[in-house]
Amino acid sequence: MVAPNGRAPLYLRATVKIKRNEAAAAARRIVDFKPRFVIFSQGQWYAEDAAERLTSSLDWKLE
View (cartoon, rainbow, N blue to C red):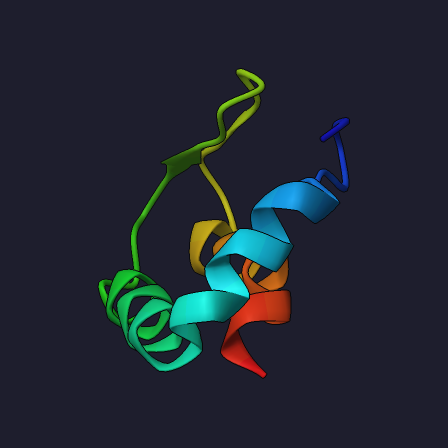
């Protein structure tokens, strides 16, 4: 989880796979908000291209 291309750690990805369908639906709902800005847990925030950056960070879940 390091900026600028941080991703969820492997242990979290493995845990989320247990509830794969529910997690994918939740990720899709978040992306569908089409936010104007986004703040990631490592403190990096984006006022431009927020939806694209959010989609990129959740791509492992949206597949």
